Length: 185
Image 1 (cartoon, rainbow, N blue to C red):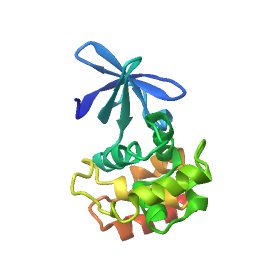
Image 2: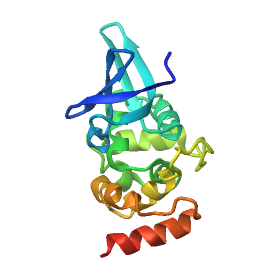
Image 3: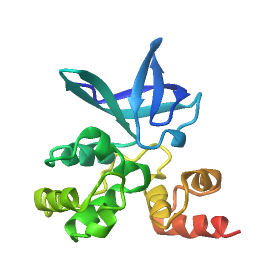
Image 4: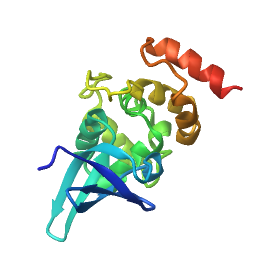
C-alpha cells in the first residue's frame, strides 16, 4: 500500500495526472487534474485500488481528502470512481457536513449520485465522521483558505491567482478577508 508519491507532474488528462518519481511515471486518477500544473512538484496522497481486472491509483491533495475517500468507498454502491467525483468541487468539510445534516440535495448534485446512494451514505456515515482539521496542513498553509473560497463558489483558477498575495501567517479568518478583497477587485 502506498501513502503518497512526491514528484513532478508531467502530464494532465481529463481525469488523471502523471507524477514522475525516480524516472517512473505514475498515472494517478484525480478529481480535478487542472488544479495541478505541469512541471510542478507535488506530494500526492495515494489510494491503490486493486481488483482482479484493475490496479489503479487515486490521488488527493491532502490526508483529509484521502481519509474521507476511504470512508466513502466503504458505502454500499459507491466505488472509487464515483467517490472521487466528490473532490472535484466539494470540500471535505462540506461533504461531511452534508452527511451529518442529512442534506440529500447537496449530495445528489454530484454526477452519478442518486437519492438512493445519498441515503445509503447518510445511513452508513452519519455521526461516524467529524469535521476535523488535521495539523498536517501543506507548507504554505493555504488549504483552509482554499476550502473556504471554494465553498463560496470561487474557481480554483481564480483562487490560485490571488494566493501569492495572501499573508499565510495570519489566522484563516483574516486570510479570507484579504482574499475576498482581492477577488472582488
